[in-house]
Image (cartoon, one colour):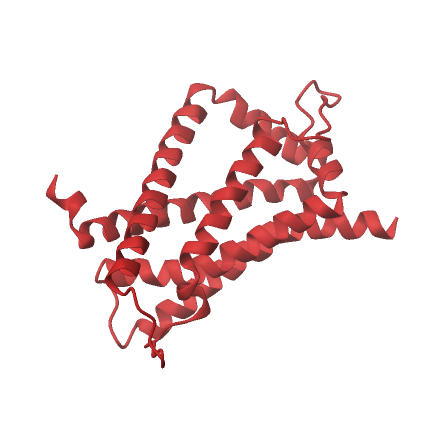
Length: 221
């Protein structure tokens, strides 16, 4: 299909898949926040997802497809841009360039590496030191698994760094979505940029507060 070959088409697919993952990140963060209710909160949430059976795996397969498309086009477009500008300028002028926009490929690769680690850690549960068991109601004890993991300062640090990478990636990625789709104007650009940064910060805070609070609590004790 011609749309897959054009730069505009690939950018649109990147934008759509990217924002789909943002929506997932928001829903996932809300689900993870049930850990603050206590063991019953997050264990009940995990049990509910498990009871969905094939639907969960179908959703995961779809999300994985989006992730792979996003990564593939991201790397491809970055390489094409680099090939089109092979020489460095003595004075490099960048209009509206930011740290977030300049590091999109690197923060994206960091997030990709983290997703693999996160799946091995809490989904496949094959990383060293994972504490597994069941609670008093016979449900998988996600609460104990998460708390025991983040009591390890090194693991908590990895998660916090990954969430910082997510923040920088989304700070530019969300506003880039509106630009790619042609939905922004000079008048709305500042507002869209502010909203993108706000959403990125909410996700950073929402995800990072879990490992930070558990790690700090472990240090205090």
